Image (cartoon, rainbow, N blue to C red; front, side):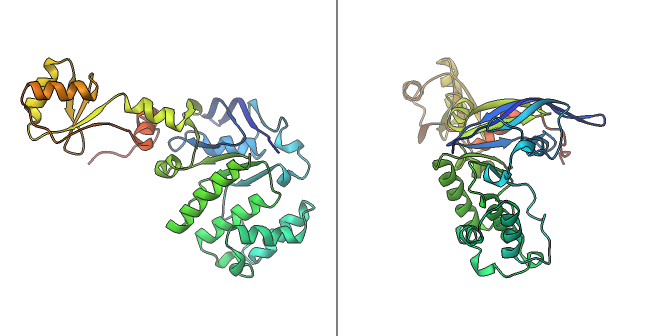
Length: 305
């Protein structure tokens, strides 16, 4: 089953705008890879190029070593969800999937299997135009799974899902990767990716900023910081400064300390008779790590009030 997505040196210009500027990364089997970046970073264009919907000016995008356009019965190789609203509104959910299945030589029983898999069997005879956004999202996932493909490409798959649906999606993505599939998804929800993705491809202005594991990215963003809580922050900062550390207020009423490990911070505060209630290793969130990486790549920024 194992197939990979290979993106190499993609360049794509729309008029005067450079959408992709040397985009390159690999999505490997058995991993959930998150494609993240600010609006206008090139995420959707990259996915469209992989799926043959846009042609690159330079570079290539391959699925299992072949361009999408050369795949026979492509749903058996790659399942994709780019726009959950791309449905014929008068067609029922089941008939939408049945039409797709017949176009790929898939049996009708496969339609019922994926309806069950995404929890859509009770709504199978409802017309697509009357489905909620979350239900259309589930129907789009069902369509992506129809051919039991080794590769999945999903653009904002939790969009419109309620909390139960988000938990379900997280488990589904993890289970699909656990079966050895290559899963590529884009998302703006860093908290969801932190519990779902193994690998992150962070992009900005059409190029890759970082291609790293989620654990490694968070560790790098944490930078050996220590969180200190004390009723005497000025005295603590002075004592730690004399010991070679730097302390500054964080956003949660504590001090963020760098330059010394926790045990030496405790020793310095104790020697200076500065009281404290907590000294703990700091762990950055994925959102904080992402913001650190992409701060210079944001193209559309709101004005501060």
